[in-house]
Image 1: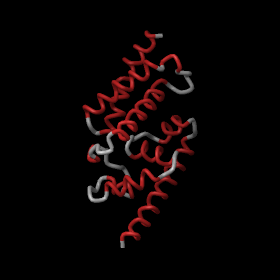
Image 2 (image 1 turned 45 degrees about the vertical axis):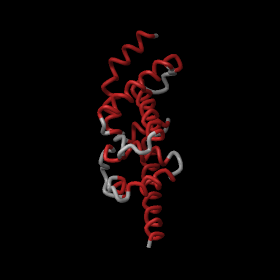
Image 3 (image 1 turned 90 degrees about the horizontal axis):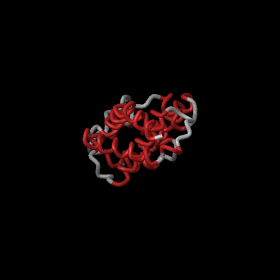
Image 4 (image 1 turned 120 degrees about the vertical axis):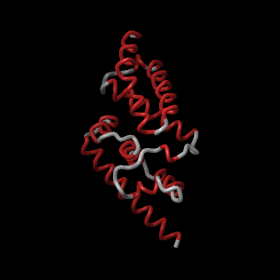
Length: 164
């Protein structure tokens, strides 16, 4: 089994590192999280059931490592987060005056909306990949992401009204 892990490590190390670099926008942090991802993968290698591809499984572990890192260090500079692809509520996550308010809104989203939104916006995953991580279809991912954006936009509007 160790030989299979070594093969997977060689085959997917760059994929996982690039995935984490897209999430963190910080090469040193991405490297550290890549090492932690493969450490966790090695610890749980025997429990990998093959329900998804090895790369999807590894990226799921990497995503968990990244989210754990954010929970442990909420002061991680937000300028390290990649720029969103759509000009909407996600712009608030880049604007330094509104970062904390936007993050509070994001953390108020219920699961799976928060995670799908985070994976799509910050992780750069496509809907097929996100659906696969959840064991769902890409249509489910699209719908969940759309609803998360709607919820965030509504929450942001309510938040702005409260400030006035």
